[in-house]
Amino acid sequence: MKIQILTLFPGICHGVLGESMLKRARERGLVTVEALDLREWAEGRHRVTDDMPYGGGPGMVMKVEPIFRALSDLRGPQTRVVLMTPQGRKFDQSIAREYSRVEHLILICGHYEGVDQRVADHLVDDELSIGDYVLTNGALAALVVTDAIVRLIPGVLGDAESAVQDSFTSHLLDHPHYTRPETFQDWKVPEVLLSGNHAAIEKWRREQAERLTRERRPDLLR
Ligand code: ADE
Image 1 (cartoon, protein in one colour):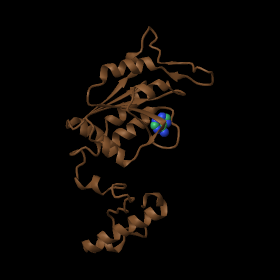
Image 2 (cartoon, rainbow, N blue to C red; image 1 turned 30 degrees about the horizontal axis):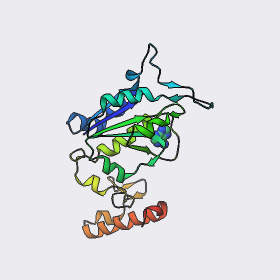
Image 3 (cartoon, rainbow, N blue to C red; image 1 turned 180 degrees about the horizontal axis):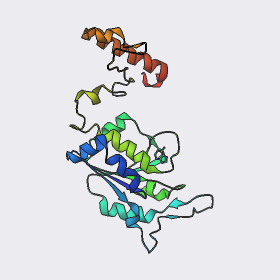
């Protein structure tokens, strides 16, 4: 799989792509992730990528032409093009799963007041938001989406179980986890986890996941 993040600030991405799980997945050849500088497709000596909004108002708007030219160069027959925007459909685990099966993904990052609407109307396949808040820069959102997708690619996670068991796959939040020591201050690990009784442990974890979900995210329960 190849993911290309098209942004005015590729430097924002380099740290995240060069550490931990994303770094290892790239090094092992399981995924290619690149942060591409949209300015490379901007014209003129100043490589302008934004302009004032028609109709007036504050802020600048990202221009359509550099994005059009970049996509003309990058897009292939198997490419899915996504615009990161607070106006998009809300990203979740099922969308992450869907995109983890795509061969080539281009994530376009907005900046400034917004992106010329003709990008959304004519150039992209999907618009995604990572939540109901506004970031200064879509690159942060693209990195969130990239991370959530890449960890679902077969072979990326060390323990094959860990992607199956985590939150949302079962429409439940994850159960609590503990490791040594058994007692810290006077905070004890729940007795059942020390019992060696695997059926009882499974039952406890299930109950905890259901309780947490009921208390914190009842919207996830069907
Ligand atoms: N750009 C700015 N805010 C965003 C958000 N919440 N999701 C996706 N892209 C964004």
